[in-house]
Structure formats: structure tokens, C-alpha cells
Length: 416
Image (cartoon, rainbow, N blue to C red):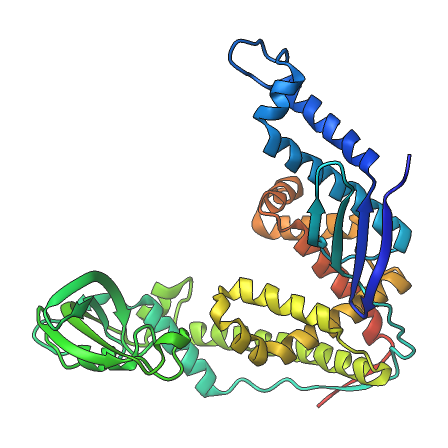
């Protein structure tokens, strides 16, 4: 029987394109398998399960059989393409230009992002500086103030106009023709946090509770929806309630309320220690970033365009960026995506060439350590992480730790 014909039609660092032709004979065999599968489970009026005539099943489920046939042929073709071209895909392929006429071969194209081949000739003998800033008293006071805000209750304010940092309950409706009010929406807004456009916040801060106001506001020039930028909107705002936080005094009683602290001084000490640990972690992270930058420069590592575009798409999905804003988002985050791609390429190369992947023993040990801290068992923690689909994240984190331990052992790190 003729085999699936696969031909590479395009290639660049990080991507490949392949044309696929599936012979008629294989198409027909795949159709028969799909039809038989539907016949075996079909329930049609007047026939027992699995006993309906094949011709009737093919007519009744024609679209489903066609779809199942295509899925099988694409799976077979992709498996053959990976083997024939020795591809190292980093994601599922995209299907383009699919054609399937009755009695003819199935043809289409695979477009796929692949791991490019890189060579790292120098991975060590770099000189790095590790700077750990001292935690200032201002940082400690700022953190204590944040704790005060987190613990402070919201108390209703009567007879006063709201001010920045107040929590307001408002209804905002669109006005049409100067009189008709449409689509009223209720909002809880902390003024000054940027959740409402500046014009709306300005109107709200000029109102008293239970007042309504008709106004024309204008969307700011940097509004996320380009179509609304600079555009006016007639609205009716109703201010229902104003709440203000009552901040506790910084004293021993507040320290006891926050946690198991006997005095404000004990709380202050704990906050300082936490901030110092955070500064230590950031210093380590910066050393890693600097090391990757030096490896990139020493080896001229390039971020392939297809992988950068893929990273941007993943970022956009994670941040919930709408399609109409993707172009602006891509320009803003392009350098971030490039840096991430270069970093991933370097780490993957090191894992592969120096056998640095986290082992099952490494994973078991970390699970036991984490479980002991949380007062549970390693088996229960593993099950919980698997259910949340976070076990692979833990494994990747362990692999990165091994990679950077190896890299840093090849270079010199000095205090700044």
C-alpha cells in the first residue's frame, strides 16, 4: 500500500512547514474503520444497537465519520512526519490548507514550532556580583502600614463626599438621547486604584451618598479598548454608599491581633526578617538573570521569531489580552518574550547535554520536605499536586535548581 507522502516545504530557526499527502487507499481504510466504529455503537430506530445497516449508518453519521477519519489521518501523518524529519516539536502542529474531495487523496500542511539547534561553547568562568540591599526603616514602616490596611475594617461614612482610598458603591448607567437610561451596572470601587476612568472617579468624589448625577465623561487616550479612546460617553451615576477604613494604631495590641507576637517590637523584627529574606531571594534571582545574560552574549544565542511569537501568545492568554490589543501588547512585551525564549533554550540545552533533569528521587525528597512543613504525608501532597496539575511545575523547578547549581559552580560570584 502507498505510504503517506511527507515533504518539508519550509524551515527556519524555531519552525518548520511540511506538506502531507495521504493516499486514497489509506483514506478509504480510515473511513471504513470510522464507519465500523459508529456502526457498532449506533442506536437507530428499528434496529438493535450495532445492527443498523452500514449504508444507513454512513448516511446518518456522515459528518461525524468524516471528522473521525480526518483526526486519525492527521495523527498518523504527524507521527510519520516527526519520525521522518527527526522533529523536536515544542507544541502541537497547526493544520493549514486541508483538502479532501471524494475519491481523492487528503492533502494538508503542518506548520509547527520546533526546538532549534544551539551550541553553547562557553557556560562558565563568568564573574558575577551579588548585591543584597539593606532593609531600611522606611521599608519596614511601609510593610507595617500595609498590614494595618489589610486588617482595617470598612466603616460607612454619612454626609461626606468620598475621597481617594474610600470604598464606594455606585450604579453607572448609559444615557441615550439625554433622557433614556440603559444598562445600569452596580460597582464596588476603591477610589484611586484605577478601576474606573479618571472622569468617572472625579464625578464620584464630588457627590454625597444617595445622590445621582448626569454627566458626559471621556475615555482616556490610553484606554485598553482602542475604539473607545478619547470618546465621550453620557452616563448617570448614583452614589449609594461610602466606606472608609479605620486604621488601627501601631501598638502592642495591633501586633497581637496580626499574629502570635507579644509586642510591636516583635512584629517589627519579624517584618524586617521577612523583608531581608525577600531581598536575599531577589539577589539570587538577579545573579541568575545576569548569568543567563552573560551566557547569551558569550554564545550569541538568538531567540527565533516563531518561538518569540508563541511566547507572546501564551503571555497574552495568561493576562487575558483581547485580540484587538494584541499588537500593542506584543510591542510592549517583545523584549520580555525574547529573553524568556533565550533562557529556555539555554536551560534545555544544559539539561540535555549535562544530564541535569530532576530525578524521581529528587522529586520524592522535595515532596517529603514540603509535606513535613505542611503537616501531611508525601503521598497526600503528591496526589494533591497531581490533581491541581502542579506536579510538573515542581519537577521543572527542581530541574532549574540543578541547572543553576551546576552553572554557578563554573563561575565566580562575589558580594557587591
